[in-house]
Image 1 (cartoon, rainbow, N blue to C red):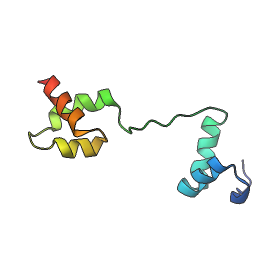
Image 2: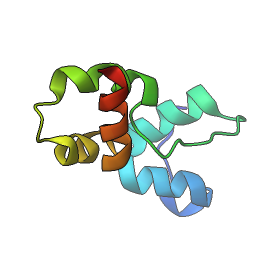
Image 3: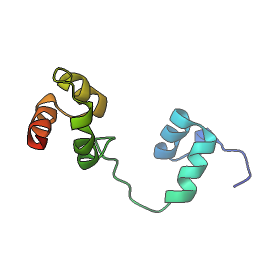
Length: 85
C-alpha cells in the first residue's frame, strides 16, 4: 500500500494501532496478520523462560523486584525459586 493512510477512515482496531504506533507499524502489522484472529497474552515474558532465569538473578532479597520486572506475582517468583533449589 503506497497511498497515504486516512486515519479518519480506519477500522477502530487499526485506528488504535495507528494512534499508538504510527503508520509504518500499522502497515507492517496489517501485512503480517491481516485476516487472522490475534490473542494478546497478558504476560510479556514466557513463564518457563522466566523460571529458567530467576535462580541466577535472585540475590535472596529481590523477589519483589523480579516479580515487577517480569510481570508475575511475588508469590509465583518465590515458589519458582524455591522449586529450583
